[in-house]
Length: 234
Image 1 (cartoon, rainbow, N blue to C red):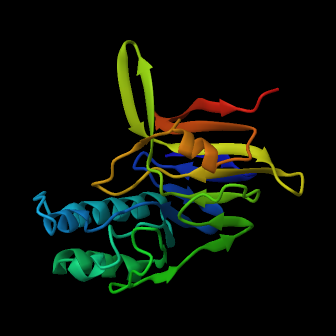
Image 2 (cartoon, rainbow, N blue to C red; image 1 turned 180 degrees about the horizontal axis):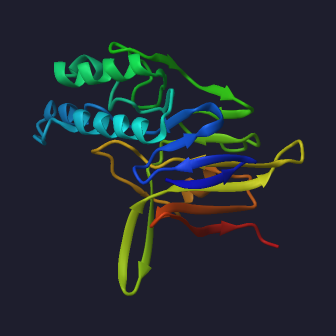
């Protein structure tokens, strides 16, 4: 786990693509896309149906590693709003155990705007904690600190003639309306069957405006590797 300073607060970015907020004792995960496998199977694309189990096992591991007492998801929790109805008993049991063990909040996303918390937890559209907005999709023009998901950012960089692609967080920095350091962060997708978008894609850079700079950050051998994606002209 690697420390990450963001918007004048301290966070921890895990190797497993989760963000831990010590001040809130909260684990944040984005874009679980549970039951994506069963969704595609229902449309004739037969892929292994155990993605929900794998994703929930990874959530459980992140809870144990961080000691979090709260889990807040950042939307697209299920691949569709009916996903919770397709959870097989084992996966549903895993989810029920997790939602009973911690305070679990589901922020809904564009894939699951009408999801039901059939296996526990509380669904909301967005919340604010300590002046930081938690929502599914970054809101262009937002000047308050913000944590979101949606874009599944992935760093693409060439190192020694090899193209490396890794899920990453994308972090912007700017001065807030009160003159204090502010910024916004898009978390990497956490789900087992989630793909990724180039972190430098114009859609991501646009979503995080206004900003002074935008970086991709990724844990690497116990340290935080930072790659500049965009900087405001001097």
